Image: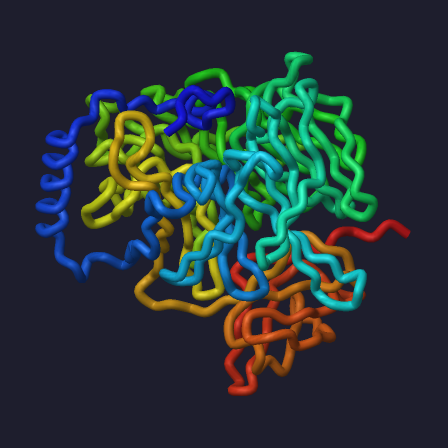
Length: 497
C-alpha cells in the first residue's frame, strides 16, 4: 500500500486505521467466527456469500472503486484496481464468474492509480450499440493530477483529458446526465475548492464548471428522476443542474445524524434518496439515512446508527464507505469497512422502512466470508445476485490478501433484465437491454407498452422507447413463453413541447 501518495484513498477518506493488527490476533478472531458459524444451522441461511475471484500480487489488485461494477453487453462485469498490474500502477479488469482478465495496466501515458469505478456509455449514432467505459485515474507519475479516459470493452484506452493543478484530481468516475454529457467532481485543486466539470462526449470537449462542491466526495453523482444530479461532498448532500452546473445544498450533516457522507446515493421507487455517512451518529461509527421529497425540498430521516467499537470489533459493523443498492427483494444492501466480529467489516440488509440486519462478518484473507475494507457499492446482475468488491487485507497494517470479487444470492434465483446506462430515458431513445438468454426474446415492453427491438446476442438487445411509454418495468418474453422483467423502474423523462 502506497501510503505516501497524495491521493491515497486511505489518507483522504474515512481512514479507518488498523495499525495494531497482528497475525495472532487475526487468527484468533477468524477461529472465533468459524466456531460461531459452525453453531448456526446451515438451513437458516437464506442468502449465500460466494467468493468468486481473489486478486493476487501478480495481477491488478486493491479495487477501491468508489462506485459500482459495470456490466457490458458481452456479459462481463468491469471495474478498476488501484494497485498492481504489469507496471504496479493499477488496472482495468473484467470478470465473469471466476474468470478474470486485466485489460489495461496503467503507466504514465494513461495516468496511474485509478480509485474510482467506471461509467458505461452507449452511442447509437452509427446505428448499433457502441459501448464505451469512462473512468479516471487519481495521479500521474511525477505528481500529476490524473486523467479522464475512455476505454472500449476490449481494453483500448484513450486519455481524453489531463487534469491540471487548478482542476484538482478526480476520485470517482463521471456520471452521464440527462443531456448526455458526463459530469464529475475533483479533489482540492490550487484554488482550494473541490471543482466540478463537464465532458461533452459528442465534441470531446472538457469544461470546468463555475460552481464547487463543499468538500471531498467519495462517490459519483446520480441522476434523479427530476433530471438533476445528486451527490455527497464534505458534510453535505447537494443537487446540481445540467448543463450549467449550479450547486444547491439540500442537507447539511451536523454529527448526531452522521458526518462524512460517502458512496453514491440511490433513489427509491418513492423518489426518496438513501445513503450512508461514514462517521457520526450515536457512536461516531456511521449512519444510514433517508431523504424524502417534501414541499420542494427534502426531509432527513435516520434509519440506523452503527454501534460503538470495542477495539476494532462490534456487533454490526462500522464506518460505511460503500453506498446502498436495492436487491431482489426491494430491500437495501450495503457494506461497512470496519467493525463486525473481526474488524474487517460487515455486509448488511435494511428495508426502506427500517430494521437493520447483519448478514455476514467479513473474515479477511480467509474464513467463511473472505474480504476486507469494502468500498464498492454492490450492483444487481442479470442472475438476480448482488456483486461487489473488497480491497482485501492490504490496507493499513495488513500483509496478506489483495481483495476479491464476491456475490450475494438468495436461495431461489430469479433471472432479471436491466439496461444501460441509467434509469432515465426519453421516448424515442434506443435502449440497450442487458440480461441472459436474450437471443430467444420474442416480445419487449416498457411499462406495459410494446416496444420495437433489434436482437443483439444472448446477453443484450436494443429496443426503442415507445412514444407513449410510461414509467414502469422493462419486460421481455422468451420463445419458451417465460417472462423476464426488471426489478427496478425505467423512468421516462418529460418531453417539453
